[in-house]
Length: 458
Image (cartoon, rainbow, N blue to C red; front, side, top):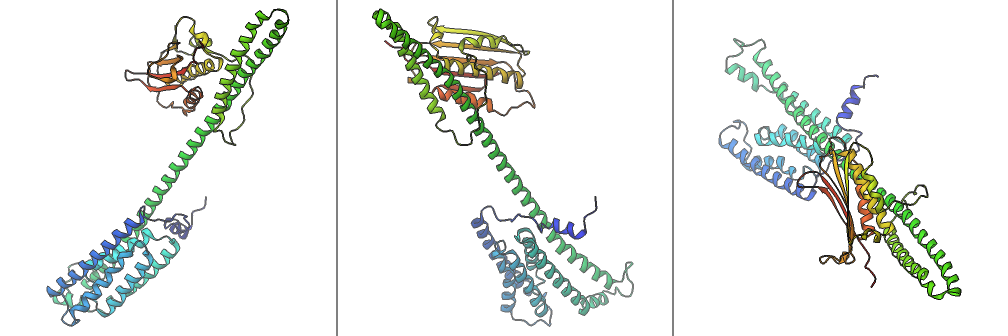
């Protein structure tokens, strides 16, 4: 693999081709803070200039009036009030101020407060510029101007020479370099560290902001994908429920047809005996209507992209009586089964769709225990109670319930997608029941589903 060109490395590090634009998380608040910061630095710059003048640090030849020094110092810091709103413009204005004032009134740019301002301005331009190519151009021009000004200052200034002569350093140099050369080199190193440090710090914070934005975008994408998977799981489960309910309703319609034919024959020969098939027709039709209402309610919210339901065999769907055989299924899990009916034989009142939902709930719960739990034992309890519940109007006709309890903990690294539990809740919603799914206080996990039974006819 060929090594990238240095220009490509620099462009990549500065994000020249990046599609990321850094903006404050709360622009109004951030811009207000910039205003207060700029005003504070302006006051400090003016105050610092007065302290410099009062301390006698100004050159004897500098006879500029005090008000001019205050104005020039404040003008150098005031642009920071919009530093993050217009970072490159502020950089150009502040550094132009540095050059123009430095050539006319050199004492002003040497103020310590303005040195902080220049550093902050360069840092802000690199860290917050939205156009990275323009940032490189503006920063490069400013650096060229600054170092050109520095070269000119060193070339024409005699201050260092005078200092070395006054200290007697030229007669007996203390180091390998002459004092004048050492002072010049130190000045250059200080400025290089100053400017490059501001650029490096600004670019590091820009990269950190881009990484945070990428992570936030990835998290949002994962959340959207999870929602889409959950929605598709709901749709798939609803279609499967619809197919199962269709089979049961079709069974009732067939029963109605057979019983109607029998009643028609009996009406001609023995009208009294026709009451039995007619009663069967009445019960089957009511059951079919109730199941069809549940079907329509379940499928009401299905979208257009729900996918297709796969085909399956046409064997009778399992019901409440088939839950017991789930306990005997091998899989390294000891399962105990119990049926509690009040009164005896009340489980016969559980309809086919309701029994199928209870069976699928127990099946999914036991499958989760085997896949995702350290449990070695589990219990499956089916309860059918025809007594009306006084505390819940939904169970005035009694209820049918299945409860699966295990004694284990979640197995590390085996977390599932949670789509099976979504299916359980969808089945419960179809029958207007309640579900309790989660860990137990005493340890283990519980899945309990309670579905309302229809009212008994008087």
